[in-house]
Image (cartoon, one colour):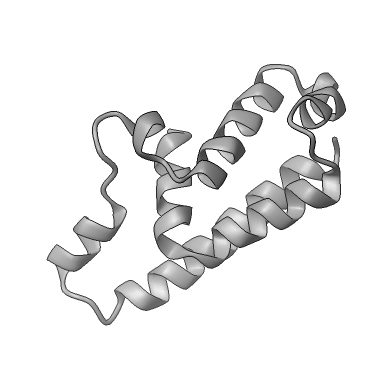
Length: 102
């Protein structure tokens, strides 16, 4: 558990940095469009982002059960790391993930 939350935070920070670099060259309108999330985010999230959001919420609600949460979703800690890094590598998915957790 001690590794999971810092890895999520690190991946999101990486995604935010990457997106900030990309947005620096874009117009304000394009930036707003790439960050906006529809009114019902759960229904419109890509499956991998929806899974990561669900896991993050469950772990935040009960940090001591992190390993059980991962097992319920058929993931290991390494699998969660891979999932989060894949989301962080895609700026649209990273923005959707971040918005969904707000």
